[in-house]
Image (cartoon, rainbow, N blue to C red; front, side, top):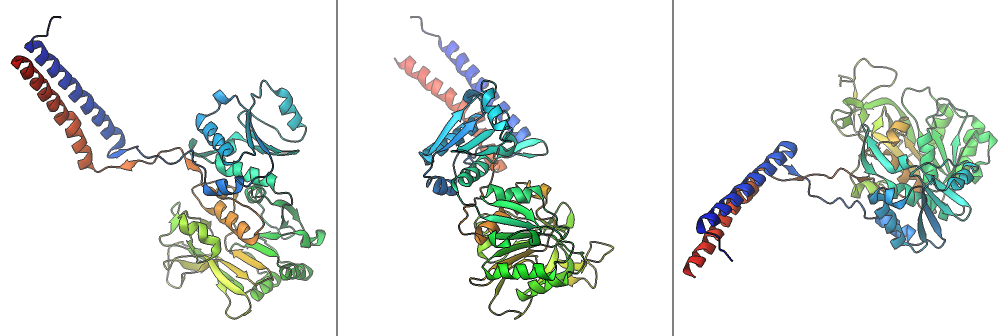
Length: 455
């Protein structure tokens, strides 16, 4: 076999070194232009199921079928993998993929039951009961782009919802110009409650586990207040949202006063802790209470648009324990809810911190949580995954109802967070691969040539 001459060997080594040098310089040049000093290298655990799912789904004792309205090979692979993890957590879970175009009878059957299935939707069934999850519910979108998936949250909630036989009742009061949003009602349904809207005089309040008074604009009648007092005496729970600037409600305020809670007459603004360039859209701080345990371990923040201050009344009722759940910062200030000319801090404004949410509890005799923002549960607020408002209401519902298994699982981001690398580190990598490595290849080639000469 004819051996290559030394000249050709040198030429090949030189060409190889130049090619490697050019390729790596082009590579790092593109990285520098596109990512500056950041390289996407992190793994965000996209497919891992949470401890909550493993705990509660792992306890299932009834079969659950998850039917995906798509062919398996056409369904997003990341969602297929997450679904497969559920079968590993519980032997009671079965996954089926059915192409809707090949199974029109299935769609028609559920359409007659009031469930309109669509392509790529998920149907969770247990015996004759079913929960429908649309494909849009699985995705988290911001500014028209998919930024995450919340399949685990909606799927685990659906499974638990079917597994619970006797669901507690949530009563939304009517008759006082309340503001009940679809998202807030859906939140309770997703977390294994049944909801109803009715005037207190037209319902049996004793059947409710929780009463929600959603930002009333008018006062309650004396007999309605008595019904609420009786409900609390039987260990009932009340959640109330009440924004600033509404008319006085002496009957309702008298009930709250018995529970050490007063409605302040100021609207709260923040100097620093706010969003959207509006000091009225404040970011509250979490108080020391069991409701906030999740947020102590997972620092995700709420927003409370247009919030009033609440007052903890001193020694109003000694047997009731009142705790601040949400607070403003010491840099906050309050303006008259009746009107103001500027959102900037002025002389005469009252200074914070203020209580923005208070919870009053009495052992064996109910509890009331009041939130000073009537927009904290708006549809557009609860739909934003980067806000913790939805999680907050979930935590409150769970705290007030021990028998309910409610889950709050953050969405998994599909945008891989970049691993920040210092510029000198990038430079060193470039030197190694663009300079040192080609030189080493040349040296190794020279060593090989010298060895051949000796032979």
